[in-house]
Image: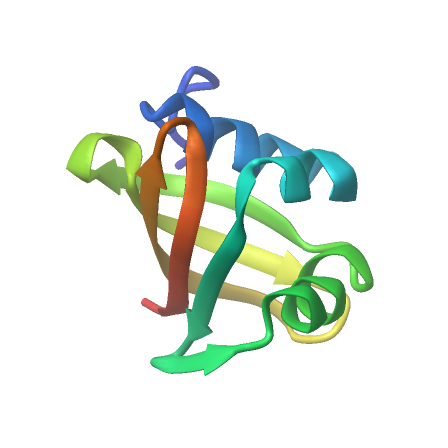
Length: 107
């Protein structure tokens, strides 16, 4: 079951999930710091290459099931054309309304 439309509770993370789900690549990038980093299954990845492959180039979508840490930690079913649907965990570091790092992996 998905969380309510006003969640995730953290407004920056909520905007990022919305950008992913609407295919808004520029909106997504605008929410990240210039030096933002990310990891997938514990391995640091090239953020721009990963987001193109896993999100915007393959119709990535997040269906958030649960949140914790004020909306900065999520469990979501992430679906894309490359891998199908999988249950994933996401953790975000947010400062001054922008995301400086996110980590994702199978939940």
